[in-house]
Length: 248
Image 1 (tube, rainbow, N blue to C red):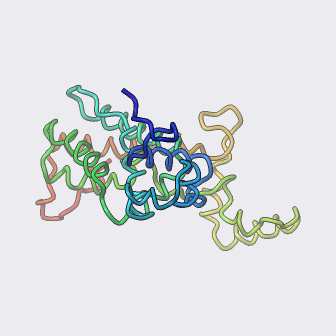
Image 2: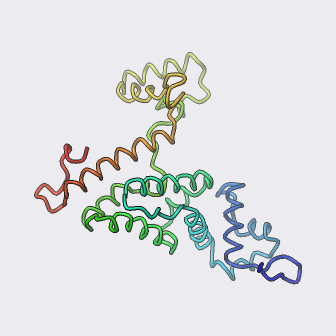
């Protein structure tokens, strides 16, 4: 059955309806344009009506996070851990790509919501239920960091030059002079940044492909975790850290 209708013929206001409307509005306008007043206009109610369902803007954002976290695919019911983890992380990444505002909100939340806690609990369970020790799982979660949510901080901006922002508005000659100066000061940085200009028709194409880079780093991490698990690694070793040969 659908939601009971209000006197106006519109569905009754509920917390779920408020949160889903807020998610849709943020998808459409961006998180910076989302306000309680603008949301009330979208729902055709007075702003005070919203406060019966969310106490303030922070609670609204927390609730929006829980809405999108529920869109992440549940872990597959299969014995191996690696493919299960990989698919779940890539599902989380797809969710964040659908909701471009979500990364910013996730990074600024100071309270773990029930949805966030449930996702983390389930994610940890993928490892524990497949034979990982508590110790290794603890360190794996540290290593995963924000990657479990489908994002990492990008190192290079498109199209691959480290001073793109500084060169905005500069003419061709000025840009070339700035690049030459940068190359003198920071030769290694410029060399690697320019390496993102891949050959036409290559696997990645022109510039850095965020999805390719994300999956490349994820697979490196999973390879290391797989090796440590197979070796029975523990932080109780005297050096308190995996050796480079063990982690690669």
